[in-house]
Image: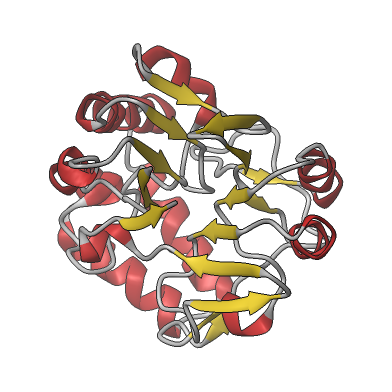
Length: 263
């Protein structure tokens, strides 16, 4: 069997259309949407809505400004639109139509934090399975899937008035979903297990939030592989935890290359 695995597509539909070539199946570990393109400010949803100059200012504030400055500037951008929620919804649907249309079959997909999974049933056609929270047999191996990212501790998500809400799950919700993945040979998630070297981004110079529940699942189940993305420039892309090969499959938007799994 040969399976290709990608994560953090962020709008790269052209490479996604090639990602399944020569494989028996394609696995997508989330972050399909290109919301803020930090490499080309004119791209992504914010680039389409506000232009490269405004997104450049936003990106600079994210790097160098305070949280208050960033939030204030972001609110001023959204206030410039007559119906920001409708504009974002339209942009998301446009990207999803292209991205799901680029997937080869069979594809098994879970959402990342930069996704709107409630819309996926509208776009996932025959041969594309959305498998968040499921265990699926592929080529005789049991693959367990859990999508999304963790909501930071002590952060309460806004229920009303949010133009864009990333797919962030409470720790309890995420841990409950992970606990259902038993008897697995391969663990597939968007975020990494809570291992410092896997969760630290050397370019952003900060750790992303890894999952303790995923690490505990790895230690208990000892699957052959743990596959994930989310951290674009990890301190280390791989290490072993017992008999499990833990592997960041890469920032697909930039590399355009799938990770190849053979057995």
